[in-house]
Image (cartoon, rainbow, N blue to C red):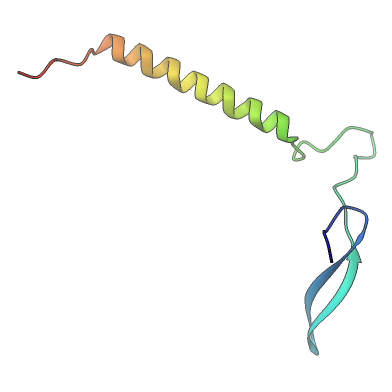
Length: 76
């Protein structure tokens, strides 16, 4: 099988009362909710990257502020 893509059959191994079996199933992403909005748990890669970038930016600013408040003393 060259690849596994949404909405195409893919091999799945599942446990049954008789033991393990391999079947093919279709799979996909979580559908939109009934009201038309996406689930809050569904996060795009771009949004996740922005969240990480914002977090790291705040951490860098915090570190700069702390270093200015408590400058490193040169060792003798």
